Length: 162
Length: 333
Figure 1 (cartoon, each protein chain N blue to C red):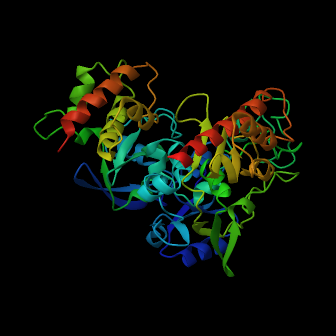
Figure 2: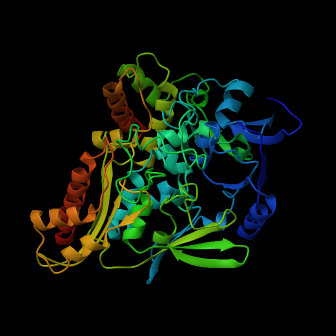
Figure 3: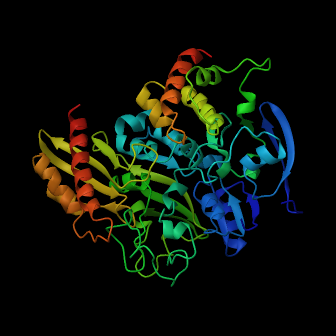
């Protein structure tokens, strides 16, 4: 809904400055998807329960469905679209998800991968149990968890030092 | 979602003024993990939101001081959970944070406003046609004769048996934590234990702070009981679920004898629930599985089950007993 009550915000998404006028009610997820054409982050539950909308805000993983876009004014957002290198080379986590068959339908996958990259950077991928604990905010209804955990353990080793 | 106006503030005093002068329906907005969720459900319908996440001077973690631990209200749950001194010296406090929610939500939610997290009672959350005295005073309580497997056994009333769902507040009341709040008349201090009301016949009144009062910080007196402590949380699944029962326990051991114990339970009551009777049964006793279990029974004394939740009396007693054995083990290491 557009109205005279819209508020101009500027955010940096995947390294690029974006200016957009938003309704105060708009979530970061809706602005990414509906206004900026970045449909990687998915709307699963829209209540912060499933993790499909996970993005990085100032380097931290958050659920974008419970983040108001107006609260992100002036801040840095990273989404799945910015993860591969500009030349198209996949991030080690993306490659590991392919290698380990860590998905079935794929709907939760962008959120899983963004969450997984943060999980490794936080230092929370030290063991299978720790990966399970710190990835518990990302649900996969196809039940690809075995592959997801294996992919993260694999990618964590490759991401060391980078 | 109902339209609202959004404002940011530069200071805690400005925040209090903005809510006090904003009229009814003006609310603080912090991490948004409870408020925005309930706004999407139509349960919360604020007309004006005052964003307090920019109050950087409240984003502090002080765990090195001699007398007390001090957490600014806007410190993130994830950051407090990961504080190395907290993990070492007060494991129950760290565990109560990282065993709550998910890392995404812990990156958003702040430790002050987290105390005011609202219940997960489905009849409260999902609105009509279900009666809920908390959501709509006088309408009744659908949980009394409804699906009440997860509802409160302690502190309930005929008007409401909704559980206080948080974890952090449970550990805080075990450690005699206090909160400093700022209102129109200045600052005041109250124990975390005095922050939440039992529902009685006014379940819509959940706390003892006014809408315009802002939690500034949480203060926890240092205690030698900290190291031998745990937050033990029992759930339907191992992670990312609310407690069926939980216990925050801390002990000071003298050989095999308990010098002093602190016990608080979560997931079982309408507010954070300190169990002083359980603490008294432990003082001066040798800790065995039997004395631990007796303390668990004391903690659940007076429990009033409804149709589906009777099993949680036994579960709660065992949770306390297991927590005591875990804490005592930490006293030895």
